[in-house]
Length: 351
Image (cartoon, rainbow, N blue to C red):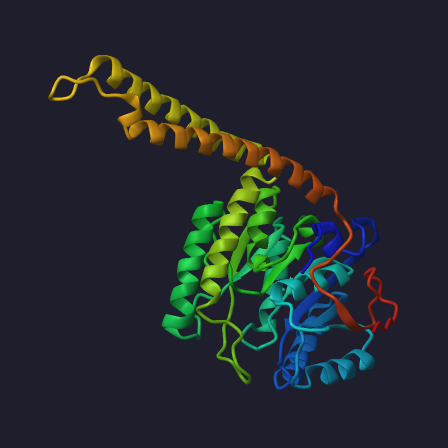
Protein backbone atom coordinates (compact mmCIF):
# COMPACT_ATOMS: atom_id res chain seq x y z
CA UNK A 1 0.00 0.00 0.00
CA UNK A 2 1.33 3.44 -0.90
CA UNK A 3 1.05 6.41 1.40
CA UNK A 4 1.26 10.06 0.62
CA UNK A 5 1.67 13.29 2.56
CA UNK A 6 -1.33 14.55 4.43
CA UNK A 7 -2.19 17.49 2.19
CA UNK A 8 -2.50 15.19 -0.79
CA UNK A 9 -4.55 12.58 1.04
CA UNK A 10 -7.00 14.68 2.88
CA UNK A 11 -8.22 17.87 1.45
CA UNK A 12 -9.04 18.47 -2.17
CA UNK A 13 -9.88 22.11 -1.48
CA UNK A 14 -7.81 24.98 -0.19
CA UNK A 15 -8.96 26.87 2.89
CA UNK A 16 -10.05 29.75 0.65
CA UNK A 17 -12.28 27.46 -1.41
CA UNK A 18 -14.20 26.04 1.54
CA UNK A 19 -17.88 26.85 1.86
CA UNK A 20 -18.30 29.39 4.65
CA UNK A 21 -20.27 28.00 7.59
CA UNK A 22 -20.78 24.61 5.94
CA UNK A 23 -20.67 21.58 8.25
CA UNK A 24 -19.35 18.36 6.68
CA UNK A 25 -20.45 15.19 8.46
CA UNK A 26 -18.18 12.26 7.60
CA UNK A 27 -19.34 8.70 8.26
CA UNK A 28 -16.99 5.79 7.48
CA UNK A 29 -18.76 2.43 7.39
CA UNK A 30 -18.34 -1.27 6.76
CA UNK A 31 -21.33 -3.61 6.43
CA UNK A 32 -23.89 -1.36 8.15
CA UNK A 33 -26.87 -1.85 5.80
CA UNK A 34 -29.32 -2.41 8.65
CA UNK A 35 -28.23 0.71 10.51
CA UNK A 36 -27.89 3.17 7.62
CA UNK A 37 -31.59 4.08 7.09
CA UNK A 38 -32.11 4.73 10.81
CA UNK A 39 -28.89 6.70 11.15
CA UNK A 40 -29.62 8.80 8.08
CA UNK A 41 -33.10 9.72 9.28
CA UNK A 42 -31.81 10.70 12.73
CA UNK A 43 -28.89 12.66 11.31
CA UNK A 44 -30.93 14.70 8.84
CA UNK A 45 -33.43 15.59 11.57
CA UNK A 46 -30.66 16.83 13.86
CA UNK A 47 -28.81 18.78 11.17
CA UNK A 48 -32.01 20.39 9.85
CA UNK A 49 -32.82 21.54 13.38
CA UNK A 50 -29.33 23.06 13.73
CA UNK A 51 -30.15 25.57 11.03
CA UNK A 52 -26.67 25.28 9.52
CA UNK A 53 -25.83 24.38 5.92
CA UNK A 54 -24.44 20.87 5.87
CA UNK A 55 -23.38 17.93 3.76
CA UNK A 56 -23.13 14.26 4.69
CA UNK A 57 -20.27 12.17 3.29
CA UNK A 58 -20.54 8.40 3.58
CA UNK A 59 -17.41 6.34 2.85
CA UNK A 60 -18.08 2.68 2.16
CA UNK A 61 -14.97 0.81 3.21
CA UNK A 62 -15.54 -2.29 1.08
CA UNK A 63 -18.97 -3.38 2.38
CA UNK A 64 -20.47 -6.65 1.11
CA UNK A 65 -23.92 -6.51 2.69
CA UNK A 66 -25.72 -4.08 0.40
CA UNK A 67 -24.62 -0.88 2.16
CA UNK A 68 -23.53 0.68 -1.13
CA UNK A 69 -26.93 0.14 -2.74
CA UNK A 70 -28.52 2.01 0.15
CA UNK A 71 -25.99 4.83 -0.12
CA UNK A 72 -26.71 5.20 -3.82
CA UNK A 73 -30.39 5.72 -3.07
CA UNK A 74 -29.66 8.25 -0.33
CA UNK A 75 -27.18 10.24 -2.44
CA UNK A 76 -29.39 10.36 -5.53
CA UNK A 77 -32.36 11.53 -3.47
CA UNK A 78 -30.48 14.40 -1.80
CA UNK A 79 -27.57 16.39 -3.27
CA UNK A 80 -26.37 17.15 0.26
CA UNK A 81 -25.48 13.48 0.59
CA UNK A 82 -22.21 12.30 -0.94
CA UNK A 83 -20.98 8.73 -1.17
CA UNK A 84 -17.55 7.25 -1.76
CA UNK A 85 -16.96 3.54 -2.35
CA UNK A 86 -13.60 1.82 -1.92
CA UNK A 87 -12.67 -1.11 -4.11
CA UNK A 88 -11.86 -3.15 -1.01
CA UNK A 89 -11.56 -2.77 2.74
CA UNK A 90 -8.73 -0.37 3.62
CA UNK A 91 -9.66 0.36 7.24
CA UNK A 92 -11.36 3.16 9.12
CA UNK A 93 -8.39 5.51 8.91
CA UNK A 94 -8.27 5.43 5.10
CA UNK A 95 -12.05 5.87 4.98
CA UNK A 96 -11.78 8.88 7.27
CA UNK A 97 -9.02 10.35 5.09
CA UNK A 98 -11.12 9.97 1.94
CA UNK A 99 -14.10 11.62 3.63
CA UNK A 100 -12.06 14.55 4.89
CA UNK A 101 -10.55 15.07 1.47
CA UNK A 102 -13.98 15.21 -0.12
CA UNK A 103 -15.38 17.57 2.53
CA UNK A 104 -16.18 21.16 1.54
CA UNK A 105 -17.05 22.49 4.98
CA UNK A 106 -15.18 24.79 7.34
CA UNK A 107 -16.27 22.45 10.13
CA UNK A 108 -15.86 18.69 9.98
CA UNK A 109 -17.85 16.23 12.09
CA UNK A 110 -16.92 12.54 12.23
CA UNK A 111 -19.43 9.92 13.27
CA UNK A 112 -19.72 6.13 13.41
CA UNK A 113 -22.42 4.39 11.38
CA UNK A 114 -23.30 1.72 13.95
CA UNK A 115 -25.79 3.91 15.89
CA UNK A 116 -23.67 3.75 19.04
CA UNK A 117 -22.84 7.44 18.59
CA UNK A 118 -25.90 9.66 18.89
CA UNK A 119 -26.37 12.40 16.26
CA UNK A 120 -28.26 14.45 18.86
CA UNK A 121 -24.90 15.24 20.50
CA UNK A 122 -23.60 17.05 17.42
CA UNK A 123 -25.18 20.47 18.24
CA UNK A 124 -23.52 20.47 21.67
CA UNK A 125 -20.13 19.72 20.17
CA UNK A 126 -20.62 22.45 17.56
CA UNK A 127 -21.55 24.87 20.32
CA UNK A 128 -18.40 24.01 22.24
CA UNK A 129 -16.34 24.63 19.11
CA UNK A 130 -17.75 28.16 18.94
CA UNK A 131 -16.27 28.87 22.37
CA UNK A 132 -12.88 29.11 20.67
CA UNK A 133 -11.77 25.50 20.46
CA UNK A 134 -10.38 23.85 17.34
CA UNK A 135 -11.13 20.22 18.22
CA UNK A 136 -14.01 18.92 20.35
CA UNK A 137 -13.85 15.22 21.15
CA UNK A 138 -16.72 13.10 22.39
CA UNK A 139 -16.31 11.28 25.71
CA UNK A 140 -18.39 8.14 26.17
CA UNK A 141 -18.40 8.31 29.97
CA UNK A 142 -21.02 5.55 30.24
CA UNK A 143 -20.08 3.05 27.56
CA UNK A 144 -22.41 0.20 26.69
CA UNK A 145 -19.62 -2.15 25.55
CA UNK A 146 -18.20 -5.27 27.16
CA UNK A 147 -15.75 -4.63 29.98
CA UNK A 148 -12.88 -6.99 29.16
CA UNK A 149 -12.86 -6.81 25.37
CA UNK A 150 -13.73 -3.14 24.82
CA UNK A 151 -13.80 -0.87 27.87
CA UNK A 152 -10.66 -2.10 29.66
CA UNK A 153 -8.42 -2.07 26.55
CA UNK A 154 -9.85 1.34 25.66
CA UNK A 155 -9.03 2.71 29.12
CA UNK A 156 -5.48 1.41 28.83
CA UNK A 157 -5.06 2.87 25.34
CA UNK A 158 -6.44 6.27 26.38
CA UNK A 159 -4.08 6.38 29.37
CA UNK A 160 -1.06 5.54 27.23
CA UNK A 161 -1.97 8.01 24.49
CA UNK A 162 -2.57 10.81 26.98
CA UNK A 163 0.71 10.11 28.75
CA UNK A 164 2.80 9.76 25.60
CA UNK A 165 1.37 12.76 23.74
CA UNK A 166 0.64 15.08 26.66
CA UNK A 167 -2.88 15.68 25.32
CA UNK A 168 -5.16 14.33 28.03
CA UNK A 169 -8.48 13.01 26.76
CA UNK A 170 -10.67 10.34 28.34
CA UNK A 171 -11.81 8.78 25.07
CA UNK A 172 -9.53 8.94 22.03
CA UNK A 173 -11.44 6.06 20.47
CA UNK A 174 -14.76 7.89 20.24
CA UNK A 175 -15.35 8.62 16.56
CA UNK A 176 -17.77 11.46 17.33
CA UNK A 177 -15.56 14.52 17.07
CA UNK A 178 -15.77 18.03 15.62
CA UNK A 179 -12.84 19.80 13.95
CA UNK A 180 -12.11 23.09 12.27
CA UNK A 181 -10.99 22.02 8.82
CA UNK A 182 -7.79 24.06 8.88
CA UNK A 183 -6.37 22.27 11.93
CA UNK A 184 -6.40 18.87 10.23
CA UNK A 185 -5.31 20.14 6.83
CA UNK A 186 -1.75 18.90 7.43
CA UNK A 187 -2.51 15.75 9.43
CA UNK A 188 -1.53 12.55 7.66
CA UNK A 189 -3.82 9.55 8.20
CA UNK A 190 -2.82 5.93 7.75
CA UNK A 191 -2.54 2.80 9.89
CA UNK A 192 -4.80 3.44 12.89
CA UNK A 193 -3.89 7.12 13.03
CA UNK A 194 -7.40 8.57 12.92
CA UNK A 195 -7.69 8.26 16.70
CA UNK A 196 -4.59 10.44 17.14
CA UNK A 197 -5.90 13.46 15.21
CA UNK A 198 -6.54 15.49 18.42
CA UNK A 199 -2.95 14.87 19.52
CA UNK A 200 -1.57 15.86 16.11
CA UNK A 201 -3.74 18.97 16.09
CA UNK A 202 -2.61 19.92 19.60
CA UNK A 203 1.04 19.53 18.58
CA UNK A 204 0.31 22.08 15.83
CA UNK A 205 -1.14 24.51 18.38
CA UNK A 206 -4.85 23.67 18.22
CA UNK A 207 -7.06 24.05 21.28
CA UNK A 208 -8.56 20.68 22.19
CA UNK A 209 -11.34 19.82 24.61
CA UNK A 210 -13.92 17.09 25.17
CA UNK A 211 -17.63 16.83 25.87
CA UNK A 212 -19.56 13.96 27.44
CA UNK A 213 -21.74 12.27 24.82
CA UNK A 214 -24.31 9.49 24.76
CA UNK A 215 -23.40 5.93 23.93
CA UNK A 216 -25.82 3.20 22.86
CA UNK A 217 -25.64 -0.53 22.46
CA UNK A 218 -25.16 -1.73 18.91
CA UNK A 219 -28.53 -1.87 17.13
CA UNK A 220 -27.58 -4.36 14.41
CA UNK A 221 -24.55 -5.89 12.74
CA UNK A 222 -21.30 -6.89 14.42
CA UNK A 223 -18.44 -4.85 15.84
CA UNK A 224 -15.35 -4.40 13.69
CA UNK A 225 -13.05 -3.98 16.68
CA UNK A 226 -11.25 -6.59 18.74
CA UNK A 227 -8.33 -7.19 21.07
CA UNK A 228 -5.98 -7.59 18.10
CA UNK A 229 -6.20 -3.84 17.54
CA UNK A 230 -4.46 -3.06 20.86
CA UNK A 231 -0.98 -3.94 19.57
CA UNK A 232 -1.48 -1.92 16.40
CA UNK A 233 -2.61 1.08 18.40
CA UNK A 234 0.42 0.81 20.67
CA UNK A 235 2.81 0.64 17.70
CA UNK A 236 1.11 3.63 16.09
CA UNK A 237 1.42 5.46 19.41
CA UNK A 238 5.18 4.93 19.38
CA UNK A 239 5.27 6.41 15.89
CA UNK A 240 3.17 9.40 16.96
CA UNK A 241 5.53 10.07 19.84
CA UNK A 242 8.57 9.85 17.57
CA UNK A 243 7.02 11.78 14.69
CA UNK A 244 5.65 14.49 16.97
CA UNK A 245 9.04 15.10 18.58
CA UNK A 246 11.49 14.20 15.84
CA UNK A 247 9.46 13.99 12.63
CA UNK A 248 11.44 16.81 11.01
CA UNK A 249 14.74 16.18 12.82
CA UNK A 250 15.32 12.42 13.16
CA UNK A 251 19.07 12.99 13.40
CA UNK A 252 18.51 14.52 16.85
CA UNK A 253 16.95 11.25 18.01
CA UNK A 254 19.32 8.75 16.40
CA UNK A 255 22.32 11.04 16.83
CA UNK A 256 21.63 11.39 20.53
CA UNK A 257 21.48 7.63 20.96
CA UNK A 258 24.58 7.24 18.79
CA UNK A 259 26.72 9.68 20.74
CA UNK A 260 25.53 8.19 24.04
CA UNK A 261 26.48 4.71 22.88
CA UNK A 262 29.86 5.87 21.57
CA UNK A 263 30.57 7.71 24.83
CA UNK A 264 29.65 4.64 26.84
CA UNK A 265 31.84 2.48 24.62
CA UNK A 266 34.79 4.83 25.14
CA UNK A 267 34.18 4.79 28.90
CA UNK A 268 34.15 0.98 28.98
CA UNK A 269 37.31 0.95 26.83
CA UNK A 270 38.98 3.34 29.27
CA UNK A 271 37.98 1.07 32.14
CA UNK A 272 39.56 -1.85 30.29
CA UNK A 273 42.79 0.12 29.84
CA UNK A 274 42.76 1.13 33.53
CA UNK A 275 42.41 -2.51 34.56
CA UNK A 276 45.33 -3.45 32.28
CA UNK A 277 47.65 -0.82 33.71
CA UNK A 278 46.80 -0.71 37.41
CA UNK A 279 45.06 -3.94 38.43
CA UNK A 280 46.35 -7.48 38.82
CA UNK A 281 44.81 -10.91 39.07
CA UNK A 282 45.11 -12.95 42.27
CA UNK A 283 48.16 -14.68 40.86
CA UNK A 284 49.83 -11.35 40.17
CA UNK A 285 49.41 -11.38 36.40
CA UNK A 286 48.09 -8.26 34.67
CA UNK A 287 44.56 -8.22 33.23
CA UNK A 288 45.32 -8.52 29.55
CA UNK A 289 43.05 -6.56 27.26
CA UNK A 290 42.50 -9.41 24.80
CA UNK A 291 41.30 -11.62 27.67
CA UNK A 292 39.03 -9.01 29.20
CA UNK A 293 35.36 -9.40 28.10
CA UNK A 294 34.82 -5.69 28.68
CA UNK A 295 36.77 -4.90 25.52
CA UNK A 296 34.08 -6.74 23.50
CA UNK A 297 31.37 -4.67 25.20
CA UNK A 298 33.30 -1.47 24.47
CA UNK A 299 33.68 -2.37 20.80
CA UNK A 300 30.00 -3.32 20.50
CA UNK A 301 28.82 -0.07 22.09
CA UNK A 302 31.09 1.98 19.85
CA UNK A 303 29.87 0.21 16.69
CA UNK A 304 26.22 0.51 17.75
CA UNK A 305 26.76 4.24 18.21
CA UNK A 306 28.29 4.59 14.75
CA UNK A 307 25.37 2.63 13.27
CA UNK A 308 22.90 4.95 15.01
CA UNK A 309 24.63 7.96 13.49
CA UNK A 310 24.47 6.39 10.04
CA UNK A 311 20.78 5.55 10.61
CA UNK A 312 20.22 9.17 11.53
CA UNK A 313 21.73 10.32 8.25
CA UNK A 314 19.52 7.90 6.32
CA UNK A 315 16.45 9.03 8.27
CA UNK A 316 17.22 12.66 7.42
CA UNK A 317 17.34 11.76 3.73
CA UNK A 318 14.11 9.76 3.94
CA UNK A 319 12.26 12.48 5.82
CA UNK A 320 13.08 14.92 3.06
CA UNK A 321 11.81 12.48 0.47
CA UNK A 322 8.68 12.00 2.58
CA UNK A 323 7.93 15.71 2.70
CA UNK A 324 8.48 16.11 -1.03
CA UNK A 325 6.51 13.08 -2.29
CA UNK A 326 2.97 14.18 -3.12
CA UNK A 327 1.63 11.70 -5.60
CA UNK A 328 -0.16 8.66 -4.11
CA UNK A 329 -2.93 7.90 -1.61
CA UNK A 330 -3.49 4.93 0.75
CA UNK A 331 -6.73 3.90 -0.97
CA UNK A 332 -8.35 3.51 -4.37
CA UNK A 333 -11.92 4.60 -5.08
CA UNK A 334 -14.32 2.52 -7.16
CA UNK A 335 -17.25 4.96 -7.41
CA UNK A 336 -18.34 8.36 -6.13
CA UNK A 337 -21.73 10.06 -6.13
CA UNK A 338 -22.10 13.85 -5.94
CA UNK A 339 -18.38 14.30 -5.32
CA UNK A 340 -15.31 14.56 -7.51
CA UNK A 341 -11.82 13.54 -6.44
CA UNK A 342 -10.87 17.20 -6.15
CA UNK A 343 -13.46 17.70 -3.42
CA UNK A 344 -16.01 19.62 -5.45
CA UNK A 345 -19.69 18.69 -5.33
CA UNK A 346 -20.27 18.12 -9.04
CA UNK A 347 -21.65 14.65 -9.73
CA UNK A 348 -18.91 12.24 -10.71
CA UNK A 349 -18.61 8.54 -11.35
CA UNK A 350 -15.32 6.68 -11.54
CA UNK A 351 -14.68 3.03 -12.16
